[in-house]
Length: 149
Image 1: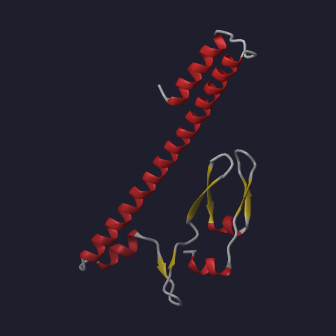
Image 2: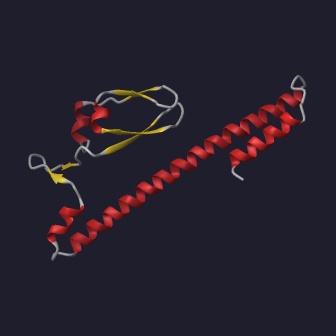
Image 3: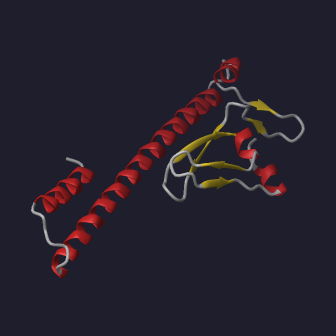
């Protein structure tokens, strides 16, 4: 049973015994159960975010392993270029991640994770699909030079 399910069970028990919430001790009990429910939701969100970060780290590790393998194996020069779709920009020696790059943005209000392309980020803002909060993206001229896109 998950934390959210346990908190819902406690709330159901409290509702089932029909406590008089006009009494101080019952109001306190109701507040504690509500707090437990909120905490369970927050913990579930944190666990989901931890899983997403772990998946991203696994992908980065795979890419680094492939780079290491390429650097250690001088006989297969063409395999690295075929495996990765990164082009070296001749003017300033930066990587061009292409139009397929996706960036994750977390809504500060509801915690919903959104994925946006570079083009969408450069538009300046997008509404959160869950709560409607306006997610704003601001870049200084110095930031655009440091960003990989």
